[in-house]
Length: 446
Image (tube, rainbow, N blue to C red; front, side):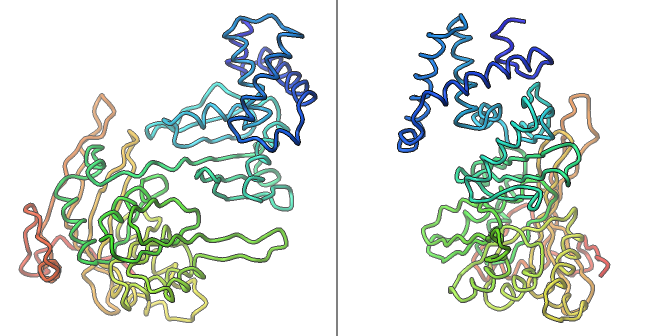
């Protein structure tokens, strides 16, 4: 194997380890010749350019003899190690990669276009991986060690980072970097096949008519992407407060206040939870509240806000179906320290939630709105939902691509009347049901 191929593919067995040693040697030489105090005063681009020039002089002076391509590759790798995140740098620079998963020093996976693939890359050692992890978490004033083996944070550049190390991670230090997708509009999501024109018109009418919408789905189904797109339909003059664990939403309106929770500090103090932020947001005169994800006792506060004058709010929840989303809201609401009977939570949910939008990620990596369901139950009765849109997939063919059709069903008359009063036209594909019993309704056990 040539030196060039070893530099480009540092993961391949003994040759990769030899090349890793070469990179480490030149990294040490580079650090010997630079003035760290001077480097810290430079901007990031100037710092990288200075390191590349100094390293180029070192290689010219001391060898080895390299072609121009080999020389450029070695310089890039050494500077990435000294300044950036080593083997992760080119992955972070690749816009097609949406998630990077490092499962110990010898195993790196990425997600592209919804598909997960393993890359022929590796870290030189566990120590090198730990150095990279420490460099990442230090940028957000966090630390990771045996006494604090888990970190969940957002980088200044926007990526969400999760770290878990031994003794909790048995395969070695594990690092997951999730890239935030760019903000898609609803018409763009139609182009991707996530929904159709009629569903867009209906969802737009719901948002403008101030229906409370819950976006439900599993991990990686595109909940935040859809929530962001739906938020673009909110009138620009309204005051919007977004509340998130890791700020991902990218609202374009002028009057937006973004709130982000805060973990405890090294002494275990100073934590600000989603619940704290939801409670505080009610004192900030919001027109709408958007919660990136409800996952605990803050659910009760969110439901109370939705049912007491903050119509048109949006939130996401992890669930695998519309029924599951309602049951999960009930369970999460019971996690509040407020002693409220479990049955009484049905009343809160039936009063607060108008629409559940269910997302599913399919085997081909595509993400689709598989159901739009309306909550039609009242008071403390069991949850009943009426499906008004759904995706019906066809059997998977030889191309392994998921095909199917979006079906549209009649809306309950009270919902159609609410849209009429809000001056929102009913999309042509949806009729109006004269009675609830002719709707496609399902009952969720609760």
